[in-house]
Amino acid sequence: MIITIGGLPGAGSTTVSREVAKKLGYKLITVGELHKQIAAQEGISSAELEKFWAQGAKDFAELKRLHNSLDKIQKDAARKNKNAVFNGKLSAFQIPWANLRVFLIAPPEIRAERVAEREGESPAKASKSIKEREEWERKEWKKIYGFDYVADRDVYDLVINTAHWNAKQIARIIEMAVSKG
Image (tube, rainbow, N blue to C red):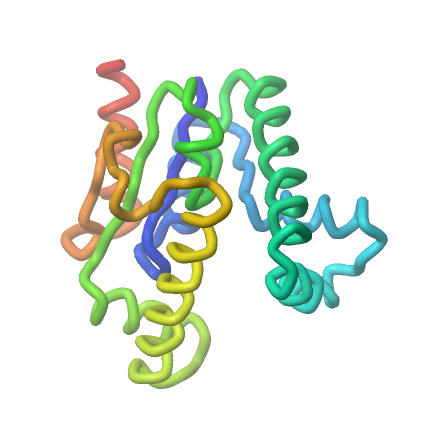
């Protein structure tokens, strides 16, 4: 079974993905790790990865090429793995044959608190960075792919507001959805 879990920045998709993979005994594949594979293919160290993507963002054709590489790796991984959880904002769109596609949301203030705690910064700074990141992703990815991963929710089988439950509880909800499928 292939499960995709994406969400808004700070909604908890990485934490929930880890928990779901652990509970089900599935392989966890994160888009962050796939980014590192692309960087390695391009001869770029993990330390230079942010710079690598920032440079690509300045050149639309290069950014599209980088995303196409990432998409191919993700699709290939989904074809090779029978039981896996994919953690990525665009995974539901890139793996439309997934058995369960989940999207996590939470109010902006809760997401900012989580990111602030994780990053060791103020909630105000985290709120600003989340807003900027989400706006950039939605705008750029709409240009590249023609969809808005936040607004175009028809691809998701399950949308969960993570403000109400912890990661273990959300994983249980997803596990129940898997058992019903």
